[in-house]
Image 1 (tube, helix red, strand yellow):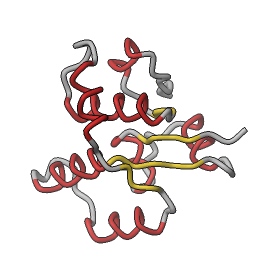
Image 2 (cartoon, rainbow, N blue to C red):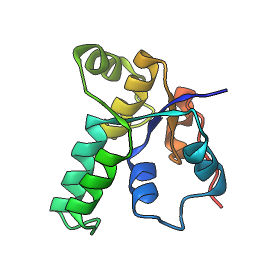
Image 3 (tube, rainbow, N blue to C red):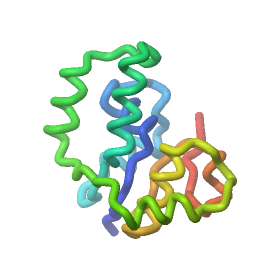
Amino acid sequence: MSMNLLLDTQVVLWWFLDSPRLTKPAIDILEKPGNTFFISAASLWEIWIKHAKHAFPFDADALENAIAMSGMTELVVNGAHARAAAELPRHHADPFDRMLVAQARVEELDLVTYDKALKPYGVPVLRRK
């Protein structure tokens, strides 16, 4: 059965940068034929902030091209997402992660994440190695 998946920022970065930190369960999800992948505009914003702060060094042009060629659908942030993020319980303070949870709920997507702090929102969390 195919799934509609919203990828957490960390998963996106690890996938496109071919990081060994990406676990087999995540790779299986990412390589499964028929799955549809979404990348949030909030994740793209977070990636560029990290890049600008030199917190996560990578070839910006190569990453941008890889994302563009991946077939992922960019999920814009809209008013319904903003409201849903604001109405979430305060289990987690990171605004980017809260937006991803809100978008996944509003758009009925499965969020692919390693962030254990998101578990209280009912989001499935991938296991680390």
